Length: 380
Image (cartoon, rainbow, N blue to C red; front, top):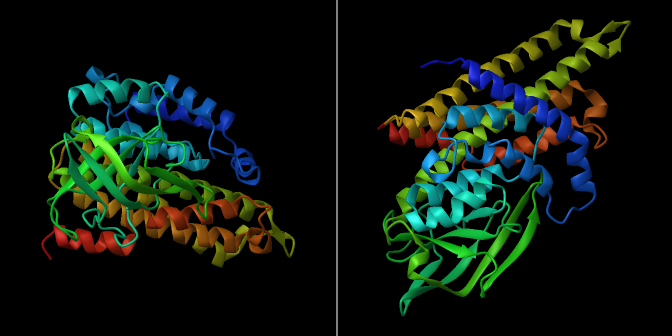
Protein backbone atom coordinates (compact mmCIF):
# COMPACT_ATOMS: atom_id res chain seq x y z
CA UNK A 1 0.00 0.00 0.00
CA UNK A 2 1.15 3.54 -0.80
CA UNK A 3 0.78 5.42 2.48
CA UNK A 4 1.61 8.81 0.95
CA UNK A 5 -0.47 11.27 -1.01
CA UNK A 6 -0.05 11.73 -4.73
CA UNK A 7 0.69 15.19 -6.09
CA UNK A 8 -2.97 15.56 -7.06
CA UNK A 9 -4.10 14.54 -3.58
CA UNK A 10 -1.71 17.03 -2.01
CA UNK A 11 -3.24 19.79 -4.14
CA UNK A 12 -6.71 18.63 -3.10
CA UNK A 13 -5.64 18.75 0.53
CA UNK A 14 -4.25 22.27 0.16
CA UNK A 15 -7.40 23.44 -1.57
CA UNK A 16 -9.63 21.93 1.11
CA UNK A 17 -7.51 23.41 3.90
CA UNK A 18 -7.69 26.88 2.35
CA UNK A 19 -11.46 26.63 1.87
CA UNK A 20 -12.06 25.54 5.46
CA UNK A 21 -9.72 28.19 6.84
CA UNK A 22 -11.48 30.97 4.95
CA UNK A 23 -15.09 29.75 5.11
CA UNK A 24 -15.56 27.77 8.31
CA UNK A 25 -13.56 28.95 11.33
CA UNK A 26 -14.55 27.50 14.69
CA UNK A 27 -16.43 30.66 15.56
CA UNK A 28 -18.98 29.68 12.89
CA UNK A 29 -19.66 26.41 14.72
CA UNK A 30 -20.21 28.33 17.93
CA UNK A 31 -22.56 30.75 16.16
CA UNK A 32 -24.62 27.91 14.69
CA UNK A 33 -24.97 26.37 18.12
CA UNK A 34 -25.67 29.51 20.11
CA UNK A 35 -28.03 30.91 17.51
CA UNK A 36 -30.18 27.75 17.47
CA UNK A 37 -29.92 27.77 13.69
CA UNK A 38 -32.94 26.07 12.09
CA UNK A 39 -30.78 23.89 9.83
CA UNK A 40 -27.61 23.63 11.90
CA UNK A 41 -25.58 24.03 8.71
CA UNK A 42 -25.01 26.45 5.85
CA UNK A 43 -26.72 25.71 2.56
CA UNK A 44 -24.56 28.36 0.91
CA UNK A 45 -21.40 26.62 2.07
CA UNK A 46 -22.85 23.27 0.98
CA UNK A 47 -23.41 24.64 -2.51
CA UNK A 48 -19.83 25.89 -2.62
CA UNK A 49 -18.59 22.45 -1.63
CA UNK A 50 -20.61 21.03 -4.51
CA UNK A 51 -19.03 23.52 -6.91
CA UNK A 52 -15.61 22.33 -5.78
CA UNK A 53 -16.64 18.80 -6.78
CA UNK A 54 -16.36 17.29 -3.31
CA UNK A 55 -19.87 15.80 -3.31
CA UNK A 56 -19.06 13.76 -6.41
CA UNK A 57 -15.60 12.47 -5.51
CA UNK A 58 -16.56 8.82 -5.03
CA UNK A 59 -19.32 8.57 -7.62
CA UNK A 60 -18.61 7.23 -11.10
CA UNK A 61 -18.16 9.67 -13.97
CA UNK A 62 -21.15 8.08 -15.73
CA UNK A 63 -23.29 9.14 -12.76
CA UNK A 64 -22.02 12.71 -12.81
CA UNK A 65 -19.23 12.22 -10.27
CA UNK A 66 -15.47 12.58 -10.47
CA UNK A 67 -14.74 8.85 -10.41
CA UNK A 68 -11.94 9.21 -7.86
CA UNK A 69 -11.80 7.18 -4.66
CA UNK A 70 -12.16 7.00 -0.91
CA UNK A 71 -8.56 8.01 -0.32
CA UNK A 72 -9.28 11.27 -2.14
CA UNK A 73 -12.45 11.78 -0.12
CA UNK A 74 -10.57 11.02 3.10
CA UNK A 75 -8.21 13.91 2.29
CA UNK A 76 -11.17 16.31 2.18
CA UNK A 77 -12.87 14.83 5.24
CA UNK A 78 -9.72 15.18 7.32
CA UNK A 79 -9.64 18.91 6.57
CA UNK A 80 -13.36 19.26 7.34
CA UNK A 81 -12.82 17.40 10.60
CA UNK A 82 -10.10 19.83 11.63
CA UNK A 83 -12.69 22.61 11.82
CA UNK A 84 -15.65 20.44 12.86
CA UNK A 85 -17.51 21.43 9.67
CA UNK A 86 -21.14 20.25 10.16
CA UNK A 87 -22.35 20.19 6.54
CA UNK A 88 -24.04 16.86 5.66
CA UNK A 89 -21.39 15.14 3.56
CA UNK A 90 -21.58 12.04 5.76
CA UNK A 91 -25.37 11.75 5.73
CA UNK A 92 -26.05 12.83 2.14
CA UNK A 93 -23.07 11.42 0.23
CA UNK A 94 -21.78 8.50 2.30
CA UNK A 95 -25.10 7.19 3.65
CA UNK A 96 -28.12 8.09 1.52
CA UNK A 97 -26.20 8.75 -1.69
CA UNK A 98 -24.10 5.60 -1.44
CA UNK A 99 -27.20 3.46 -0.92
CA UNK A 100 -28.70 4.75 -4.17
CA UNK A 101 -25.37 4.55 -6.02
CA UNK A 102 -24.56 1.00 -4.92
CA UNK A 103 -28.03 -0.50 -5.09
CA UNK A 104 -30.34 1.75 -7.07
CA UNK A 105 -31.72 1.20 -10.52
CA UNK A 106 -30.60 3.42 -13.40
CA UNK A 107 -33.66 5.67 -13.14
CA UNK A 108 -33.16 6.10 -9.39
CA UNK A 109 -29.53 7.09 -9.88
CA UNK A 110 -30.50 9.54 -12.58
CA UNK A 111 -33.13 11.12 -10.37
CA UNK A 112 -30.96 11.36 -7.25
CA UNK A 113 -27.24 11.57 -7.99
CA UNK A 114 -27.01 14.62 -10.31
CA UNK A 115 -28.94 16.96 -7.96
CA UNK A 116 -27.10 15.47 -4.98
CA UNK A 117 -23.70 16.08 -6.58
CA UNK A 118 -24.85 19.58 -7.54
CA UNK A 119 -25.74 20.41 -3.94
CA UNK A 120 -29.48 20.67 -4.60
CA UNK A 121 -30.68 17.48 -2.87
CA UNK A 122 -30.11 16.33 0.71
CA UNK A 123 -30.49 12.70 1.72
CA UNK A 124 -30.52 10.85 5.03
CA UNK A 125 -30.38 7.17 5.93
CA UNK A 126 -32.94 5.98 8.48
CA UNK A 127 -31.76 2.58 9.70
CA UNK A 128 -31.20 2.65 13.46
CA UNK A 129 -33.99 1.78 15.88
CA UNK A 130 -34.48 1.91 19.67
CA UNK A 131 -33.41 -1.72 20.11
CA UNK A 132 -30.80 -2.06 17.37
CA UNK A 133 -27.74 -0.31 18.86
CA UNK A 134 -24.94 -1.11 16.31
CA UNK A 135 -26.63 -4.09 14.62
CA UNK A 136 -27.74 -2.95 11.14
CA UNK A 137 -29.70 -6.19 10.70
CA UNK A 138 -31.82 -5.63 13.83
CA UNK A 139 -34.82 -4.08 12.08
CA UNK A 140 -38.32 -4.01 13.55
CA UNK A 141 -39.90 -1.43 11.23
CA UNK A 142 -42.22 -3.27 8.86
CA UNK A 143 -43.07 -2.95 5.20
CA UNK A 144 -46.34 -4.67 4.33
CA UNK A 145 -47.45 -5.20 0.76
CA UNK A 146 -50.36 -3.02 -0.32
CA UNK A 147 -51.57 -3.38 -3.89
CA UNK A 148 -48.63 -2.60 -6.17
CA UNK A 149 -46.66 -0.96 -3.37
CA UNK A 150 -45.90 -1.08 0.33
CA UNK A 151 -46.95 0.45 3.63
CA UNK A 152 -44.18 1.34 6.08
CA UNK A 153 -44.58 1.54 9.84
CA UNK A 154 -42.12 1.88 12.71
CA UNK A 155 -39.66 4.30 14.25
CA UNK A 156 -36.09 5.24 13.35
CA UNK A 157 -33.62 6.90 15.69
CA UNK A 158 -30.37 8.84 15.28
CA UNK A 159 -31.13 9.73 11.65
CA UNK A 160 -28.21 12.01 10.84
CA UNK A 161 -29.44 15.32 9.38
CA UNK A 162 -32.90 13.82 9.01
CA UNK A 163 -34.61 17.14 9.76
CA UNK A 164 -33.23 18.79 6.58
CA UNK A 165 -33.34 15.78 4.24
CA UNK A 166 -35.37 16.01 1.04
CA UNK A 167 -35.45 12.23 0.70
CA UNK A 168 -34.95 9.36 3.10
CA UNK A 169 -33.50 5.92 2.53
CA UNK A 170 -35.41 3.73 4.98
CA UNK A 171 -34.70 0.14 6.02
CA UNK A 172 -37.73 -2.01 6.78
CA UNK A 173 -38.35 -5.67 7.33
CA UNK A 174 -40.28 -7.34 4.54
CA UNK A 175 -39.72 -10.87 5.84
CA UNK A 176 -38.42 -12.59 8.94
CA UNK A 177 -37.96 -11.16 12.42
CA UNK A 178 -35.34 -9.93 14.83
CA UNK A 179 -31.84 -9.53 13.43
CA UNK A 180 -32.01 -11.99 10.55
CA UNK A 181 -29.73 -10.87 7.73
CA UNK A 182 -32.35 -11.70 5.09
CA UNK A 183 -35.73 -10.05 4.82
CA UNK A 184 -34.62 -6.40 4.93
CA UNK A 185 -35.51 -4.00 2.11
CA UNK A 186 -34.40 -0.41 1.49
CA UNK A 187 -36.87 2.20 0.25
CA UNK A 188 -36.29 5.65 -1.24
CA UNK A 189 -39.00 7.91 0.19
CA UNK A 190 -39.91 11.58 0.00
CA UNK A 191 -39.08 12.97 3.45
CA UNK A 192 -42.36 14.90 3.46
CA UNK A 193 -44.60 12.01 2.41
CA UNK A 194 -47.86 11.51 4.27
CA UNK A 195 -47.35 9.47 7.43
CA UNK A 196 -43.75 10.60 8.09
CA UNK A 197 -43.13 12.76 11.14
CA UNK A 198 -39.64 14.03 11.94
CA UNK A 199 -38.44 15.34 15.30
CA UNK A 200 -35.14 17.17 15.28
CA UNK A 201 -32.56 16.38 17.94
CA UNK A 202 -29.34 18.20 18.79
CA UNK A 203 -26.53 15.89 19.77
CA UNK A 204 -23.91 16.54 22.42
CA UNK A 205 -21.60 18.01 19.78
CA UNK A 206 -24.38 20.28 18.44
CA UNK A 207 -24.68 18.18 15.25
CA UNK A 208 -28.07 17.20 13.89
CA UNK A 209 -30.04 13.99 14.15
CA UNK A 210 -33.73 13.14 14.11
CA UNK A 211 -36.35 10.67 15.20
CA UNK A 212 -38.39 9.58 12.19
CA UNK A 213 -41.76 7.95 12.78
CA UNK A 214 -43.49 6.00 10.04
CA UNK A 215 -47.25 5.72 10.26
CA UNK A 216 -48.68 3.77 7.35
CA UNK A 217 -46.40 5.47 4.82
CA UNK A 218 -47.31 4.40 1.32
CA UNK A 219 -44.53 3.82 -1.19
CA UNK A 220 -44.55 2.39 -4.69
CA UNK A 221 -42.86 -0.67 -6.10
CA UNK A 222 -40.43 1.62 -7.89
CA UNK A 223 -39.23 3.05 -4.57
CA UNK A 224 -37.41 -0.15 -3.64
CA UNK A 225 -33.62 0.18 -3.74
CA UNK A 226 -32.01 -3.02 -4.91
CA UNK A 227 -33.79 -6.33 -4.40
CA UNK A 228 -36.66 -7.00 -2.03
CA UNK A 229 -35.48 -8.90 1.09
CA UNK A 230 -31.81 -8.44 0.11
CA UNK A 231 -31.23 -4.92 1.43
CA UNK A 232 -29.38 -5.98 4.55
CA UNK A 233 -26.08 -6.67 2.83
CA UNK A 234 -26.36 -3.43 0.85
CA UNK A 235 -27.00 -1.55 4.08
CA UNK A 236 -23.97 -3.14 5.75
CA UNK A 237 -21.77 -2.11 2.82
CA UNK A 238 -23.05 1.47 3.00
CA UNK A 239 -22.37 1.68 6.73
CA UNK A 240 -18.84 0.31 6.23
CA UNK A 241 -18.04 3.03 3.71
CA UNK A 242 -19.47 5.71 5.95
CA UNK A 243 -17.46 4.33 8.88
CA UNK A 244 -14.22 4.68 6.93
CA UNK A 245 -15.20 8.25 6.02
CA UNK A 246 -16.09 9.14 9.60
CA UNK A 247 -12.70 7.80 10.72
CA UNK A 248 -11.01 10.25 8.35
CA UNK A 249 -13.03 13.11 9.81
CA UNK A 250 -12.12 11.99 13.33
CA UNK A 251 -8.45 12.07 12.36
CA UNK A 252 -8.82 15.72 11.42
CA UNK A 253 -10.50 16.54 14.73
CA UNK A 254 -7.83 14.88 16.84
CA UNK A 255 -5.09 16.66 14.88
CA UNK A 256 -6.56 20.08 15.63
CA UNK A 257 -7.02 19.20 19.31
CA UNK A 258 -3.38 18.07 19.42
CA UNK A 259 -2.01 21.18 17.74
CA UNK A 260 -4.15 23.49 19.88
CA UNK A 261 -2.64 21.79 22.92
CA UNK A 262 0.91 22.12 21.58
CA UNK A 263 0.36 25.84 21.04
CA UNK A 264 -0.91 26.19 24.60
CA UNK A 265 2.07 24.28 26.02
CA UNK A 266 4.41 26.66 24.19
CA UNK A 267 2.74 29.86 25.37
CA UNK A 268 1.36 29.16 28.88
CA UNK A 269 4.01 29.91 31.47
CA UNK A 270 4.53 28.77 35.06
CA UNK A 271 7.55 29.52 37.24
CA UNK A 272 8.83 31.75 34.45
CA UNK A 273 9.02 29.03 31.77
CA UNK A 274 6.59 27.53 29.20
CA UNK A 275 4.77 24.57 30.69
CA UNK A 276 5.74 22.62 27.59
CA UNK A 277 9.26 22.44 29.01
CA UNK A 278 8.05 20.19 31.84
CA UNK A 279 9.08 16.62 31.19
CA UNK A 280 5.78 15.05 32.25
CA UNK A 281 3.84 17.19 29.78
CA UNK A 282 6.38 16.44 27.05
CA UNK A 283 5.73 12.73 27.54
CA UNK A 284 1.97 13.22 27.36
CA UNK A 285 2.26 15.34 24.21
CA UNK A 286 4.51 12.70 22.64
CA UNK A 287 1.88 10.05 23.33
CA UNK A 288 -0.76 12.22 21.67
CA UNK A 289 1.46 12.49 18.59
CA UNK A 290 1.88 8.71 18.46
CA UNK A 291 -1.90 8.28 18.64
CA UNK A 292 -2.42 10.59 15.66
CA UNK A 293 0.15 8.75 13.55
CA UNK A 294 -1.33 5.34 14.30
CA UNK A 295 -4.79 6.70 13.47
CA UNK A 296 -3.55 8.15 10.18
CA UNK A 297 -2.11 4.82 9.08
CA UNK A 298 -5.35 3.02 9.95
CA UNK A 299 -7.50 5.59 8.12
CA UNK A 300 -5.39 5.45 4.98
CA UNK A 301 -5.39 1.65 5.01
CA UNK A 302 -9.21 1.61 5.26
CA UNK A 303 -9.65 4.07 2.40
CA UNK A 304 -7.25 2.17 0.15
CA UNK A 305 -8.91 -1.16 1.01
CA UNK A 306 -12.20 0.28 -0.30
CA UNK A 307 -10.55 1.68 -3.43
CA UNK A 308 -8.93 -1.68 -4.14
CA UNK A 309 -12.09 -3.70 -3.30
CA UNK A 310 -10.01 -5.71 -0.85
CA UNK A 311 -11.67 -8.84 0.57
CA UNK A 312 -10.41 -7.64 3.96
CA UNK A 313 -11.95 -4.19 3.63
CA UNK A 314 -14.49 -4.72 6.43
CA UNK A 315 -11.77 -5.82 8.85
CA UNK A 316 -9.53 -2.90 7.88
CA UNK A 317 -12.41 -0.47 8.40
CA UNK A 318 -13.06 -1.87 11.87
CA UNK A 319 -9.38 -1.41 12.72
CA UNK A 320 -9.60 2.23 11.62
CA UNK A 321 -12.77 2.98 13.59
CA UNK A 322 -11.53 1.26 16.74
CA UNK A 323 -8.20 3.06 16.50
CA UNK A 324 -9.78 6.47 15.84
CA UNK A 325 -12.41 6.06 18.56
CA UNK A 326 -9.75 5.33 21.17
CA UNK A 327 -7.31 7.94 19.89
CA UNK A 328 -9.79 10.81 19.60
CA UNK A 329 -11.06 10.22 23.14
CA UNK A 330 -7.54 10.03 24.59
CA UNK A 331 -6.36 13.14 22.74
CA UNK A 332 -9.48 15.17 23.55
CA UNK A 333 -9.26 14.23 27.22
CA UNK A 334 -5.59 15.10 27.38
CA UNK A 335 -6.17 18.35 25.50
CA UNK A 336 -8.77 19.55 27.99
CA UNK A 337 -6.65 18.50 30.97
CA UNK A 338 -3.47 20.17 29.69
CA UNK A 339 -5.37 23.38 29.02
CA UNK A 340 -6.06 23.45 32.73
CA UNK A 341 -9.01 25.40 34.14
CA UNK A 342 -9.66 27.29 30.91
CA UNK A 343 -10.12 24.01 29.10
CA UNK A 344 -13.18 23.30 31.23
CA UNK A 345 -14.94 26.50 30.17
CA UNK A 346 -17.33 26.80 27.26
CA UNK A 347 -15.56 29.96 26.16
CA UNK A 348 -12.56 27.92 25.00
CA UNK A 349 -12.89 26.03 21.72
CA UNK A 350 -11.10 22.89 22.91
CA UNK A 351 -14.32 21.64 24.48
CA UNK A 352 -15.94 21.33 21.06
CA UNK A 353 -13.44 18.61 20.18
CA UNK A 354 -14.10 16.65 23.35
CA UNK A 355 -17.83 16.68 22.58
CA UNK A 356 -17.28 15.68 18.95
CA UNK A 357 -15.01 12.84 20.07
CA UNK A 358 -17.75 11.47 22.33
CA UNK A 359 -20.40 11.49 19.59
CA UNK A 360 -18.13 10.20 16.82
CA UNK A 361 -16.95 7.38 19.07
CA UNK A 362 -20.39 5.79 19.25
CA UNK A 363 -21.46 6.58 15.67
CA UNK A 364 -21.42 3.36 13.59
CA UNK A 365 -20.01 1.42 16.53
CA UNK A 366 -17.56 2.21 19.32
CA UNK A 367 -14.07 0.78 19.74
CA UNK A 368 -15.23 -2.28 21.69
CA UNK A 369 -17.81 -3.12 19.03
CA UNK A 370 -15.28 -2.89 16.21
CA UNK A 371 -12.65 -4.93 18.04
CA UNK A 372 -15.23 -7.66 18.50
CA UNK A 373 -16.30 -7.33 14.87
CA UNK A 374 -12.71 -7.61 13.69
CA UNK A 375 -12.22 -10.76 15.74
CA UNK A 376 -15.42 -12.29 14.35
CA UNK A 377 -14.51 -11.46 10.75
CA UNK A 378 -11.04 -12.91 11.30
CA UNK A 379 -12.53 -16.16 12.54
CA UNK A 380 -11.60 -15.93 16.19
